[in-house]
Image (tube, rainbow, N blue to C red; front, side, top):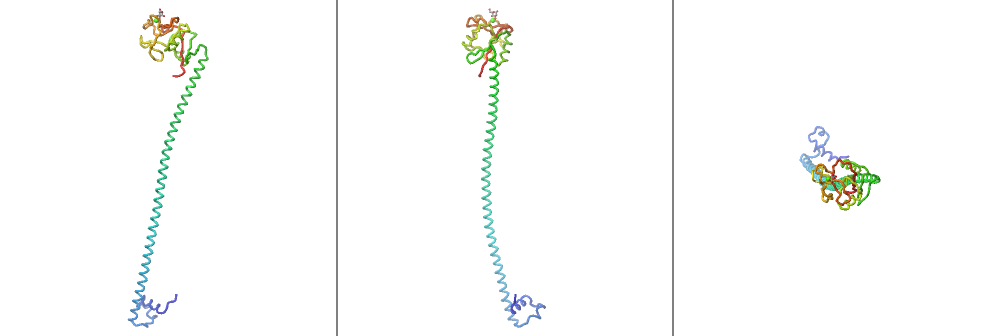
Length: 260
Ligand code: MAN
Ligand code: CA
């Protein structure tokens, strides 16, 4: 950069007044008064330049601050929107999770219900298979959706009952006139599922039900505590029942049910 003589002089004079370095170099052409005025004007100019520069810097700073403020606000707005969007998505996911949990619990309980039902069905099927095998044995007869077994041998009332129970049946319960006529038709002296062993004089069927309609023979029951088991004895009359001694060896009749 090339400085004009005056500029060179001015700058040197302004900055280095009284400097021993410049006192010999700079020619003192101007008067003191002129030099002072010129120096003041130059100072003001420099001051202005500095002030303008500072002002410009302040403006630039302000613009930057405003720009950053806007930028930050926009960024914050975006982040807020993003956060809200994520919150909404999270809410949707939580709702979905709840409904999936409910669905899963529902399926689990349905599954255990189905398993329970299939276990029951399988048990019922096995029971029916067993009953079907029993029915294929001699001595069994079907009557009104039930199966009956007339024993070829003789046993006590208790042993007769145990036999019936061993084949998923029990001693015969007579609760209709048709059944009474059917039982008599075998014309056999045999045990039926009737007893007053528990309470003397209170006759009950083997399923625990009380005796309502009875077919006692004439003068029966008469055995008091000696005769606590029911039998078909006088089968030539409809009123064929007798109370007999439970330990007596007699034939017996079992009854098998297929549905409750
Ligand atoms: C026998 C037994 C009794 C019954 C009488 C009826 O003694 O069977 O249970 O009562 O006969 O005569
Ligand atoms: Ca009797």
